[in-house]
Length: 410
Image 1 (cartoon, helix red, strand yellow):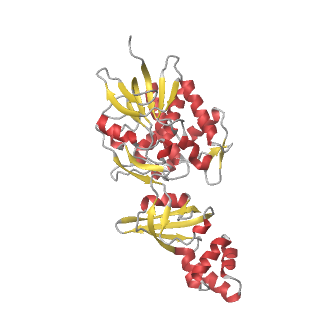
Image 2: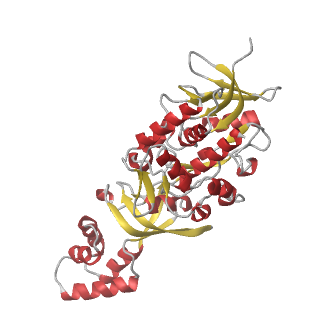
């Protein structure tokens, strides 16, 4: 009896995996046999967490503006150039059109972030699972891949634990969509990188957490945890590193700063970096002139004057005033360049994405197929490519997944 051979096996059941399988539903083949192997007990755990449970599926606007926003951990690699073909062929607008045509209404917020109109990430997951099944993919959970072998017949043999013990599965095409190392409790624990290194002799670009919270030393605003401030400028500097600047919203935590501006800055920070925070979008000279006049003309508490003048939370202003007193110079310095030393950035336990992974030079950017391993494709966060917060990383997942799906259909 001949062994059962799958047309395609996808490792992982996260965003890129399910997007790839769902993309193939556009032209399903009746005799197609696909399988998705998920190491944990349920699919899409990290997708359910994205966007605070709302799933920030992508960002609106022109796809050409996406390209320069992507990074690679390998300094010699150009992630934007690598992703350009896939992004242009499978853009953010294509992703939005796919979801809406499948019956999922979307809403675009003022800042350009796109969410399901229901505000529920589960609706995105349910749609992708349904489309994957429609395309002919079965899903097996609790199946951790521990080995890969290329057979003499040109097939891929996949060793997967679970279902009572290890088993060997054969497939014509193999897609690696195992994610990175961020939030390892979701199954994205980086274990497959070791399998790839050993089985394919494919060294990984060093991995590190990206889009992480910042923890400054002697953080004075821990009591403000949960408060968000808009229009904040954060800057980092460190010897031997390029200075960086981000502007946007920040979220106070009990240990430091999170939120889009802080998360995007984190890739440029390390222990010992200097962090400067401008709480208002004004120059030091402008704020100094404002506060000099206000404090001279009023005996009101500085915290109240600052809150009224700049529309800042009063709890924040009280803490700031405790540090600056009634000195216009001290208060202006704190408001426009509050300076800290970074104690640490986040770890993989709370990083939104992973920097590093499968080297881009080893992958065909048109198909996502490994150049030296025909029939094996790498997509999504497993690649050495990542973007800023705001829907760009799920767009990366979509574009690379759809590119691989195109190649499989051909």
